Length: 451
Image (cartoon, rainbow, N blue to C red; front, side, top):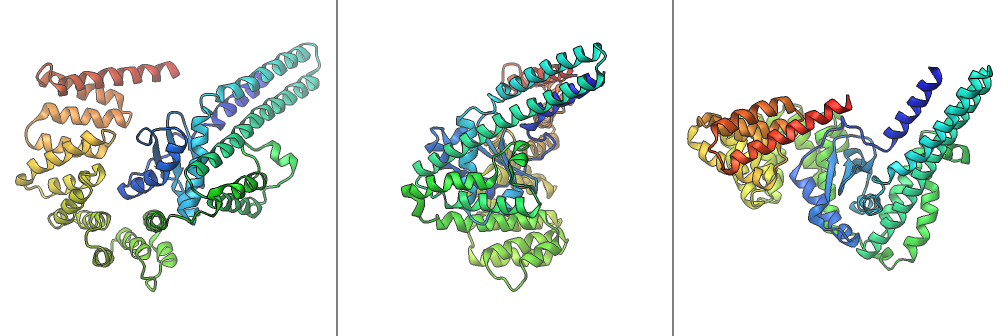
């Protein structure tokens, strides 16, 4: 039984190594998503994919990482944004991850795991045979050697995929006319971290890695990048300015107020510094200081929708929804009903508890979910409006939409059933209630099978 337990532990480790942590949370922000989409669009096109079909998703995690996990989605940790100094560096990472997508590496993960499993099974059988023959120490040695061989097989497969994604990423950058300088700079930053944390660069250490050593990647890619016509292409100054804003914004949102004020002291007067401090003061419940920073930003750019969104958010979350309506309405108009901003606007309208605002809130929130159905906050707010208006079937339907996205499948089934009973048969909402029932029941069945 000890041998079997070791074997199962190895298989579990192999299956987990290439998968993201399910508990990680997604961070939604209109400005950040717009920037990431604009940064990635030329690379997506260069990769032969459709920009509208590829999602760049921000993961609320301070570690430096990016990954793909099936489908056409690239996940980028907030820690990677914080570690990068330029938009060009992040574009290099996105290009690499697109290489995994076009190479079908997630789908092919089973090839590497399968080969490792076969080696483990063989060593297990040989080890059991030795144990039955009375050679316990030899049995353990055979199994341990087999485990190491299986792990080595899997890790070598992973490193080959990483090298392939590096090469594909370099090709995409070239086709998009984007320099590889940022890619090399980011690998250099990773290499510095490896040295700082004492990661050995020798062959023995390389055996236990899923990725090639950063030094190897720099050496291999430098020649490719420097020969490319795009090597001397200047960075996109507009993207860089937007990147610095977003980086400061995320820093202020994630870090403690004290840390933010150290990094962006009041002596700094640029847009990123005001942005970061606004979030720091807001987190520290110093609302007047946060508003002062937001107003300073609006003096610099009165019609910037994200500065208007910031002011509206501060007012709304400090208990002044009536005052938040004007900036949020303007931000919604300027972004043509960007769903995340529109959701906050709808929330402000509802939070006034003034029924004269409810019709507008319903209209705004319906438009938001029509453009972005995967927005549980908007569905929740829409459900609140429907309930306030006495439309309980649609309130139940909105709850079901939110619950199925949050994997609350049993609750989603109950809400969808209640909605189905009260909605006119054959209407789009009635059909949607049936769709959610099927989706939630199928998801529950899959969960039971996994158990």
